Length: 408
Ligand SMILES: [Zn+2]
Image 1 (tube, rainbow, N blue to C red):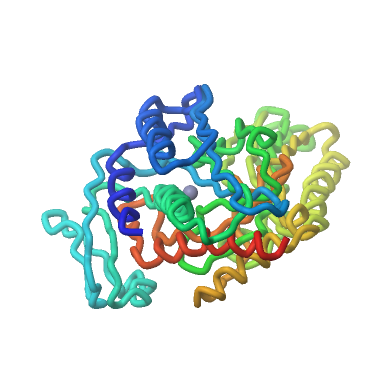
Image 2 (image 1 turned 45 degrees about the vertical axis):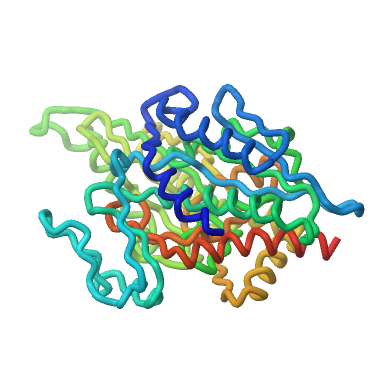
């Protein structure tokens, strides 16, 4: 366990920012630097079947140490960091025995991590916090997850008295640009189920996420001299406006929470003859999700009745709620929950208002809930992670392996 912190500090020192504009995998060459290092390290700690493919997906095996046939399970995290904020020259600060006061990240730039604004900090009184120096992100998302998985595997190698089945681990590039699961070879991974170690604060356990679709609605107008336009002009901007007025106005990101779905209009452009609306649709509930898509169709039809052939739309599904793939095998969640409880961690199960790689993997045949890696304030300069939460994540991984062997 003493290697957990140095390991983490070493990983965050390597810039692995991904790039949505790139079409290669990994999207940036620099991700190879950490990827190759991880492969070496997996060999060093005694993992077997260590592999890295042409897209930098890493897999490795910890063989079973028990005679009985136990399901193979996996742990997954990603080594890229978000394109939203720089990860170049991360210089972490370590605050031991945190006393609950303001943390000056950067005195010259007056950047302060304060519990007055980030009240979650107060949960970590007396703990060791790892923060940024205020100029970069930290990269606990998800290098904490990687450090935790490797440390847990090392621990299991050193403690053969803990009985477990075959464990597979997977590290992916490009999660932050939504492609982490795209080239993940589920068959080669060969696990019955897995966990992404990519959640935030201690206790988080997630197996529900949004169903997601995007829609583009196009309006065709007819331009006529405004002085002679009566009953002749069709203004595409006006059509777009009518369309928007028919969407439920209390079902937007800023008016909803928990399991409430929404329409989110995020782009609009228009002139007399042509206008376009782009929006996204989100809902945890499958039936409501379909109803939202139907509403786009209904509104379009309604307008088309009044102004024939003026409205067209295109709806594209993006990802689906993994719940439907997890619920039929709910022991996956129960084992994680029990592992946490045995370690004195209060499980915090809540629906994700977004998607995860795990949701894509679940639909690719690898059911994959998400577990805390311990960090807070991802994707920016206020990112931090308590060392104690990372240690608990390591223990959670070990305990899940142990419980899976006990229960099967
Ligand atoms: Zn992440």
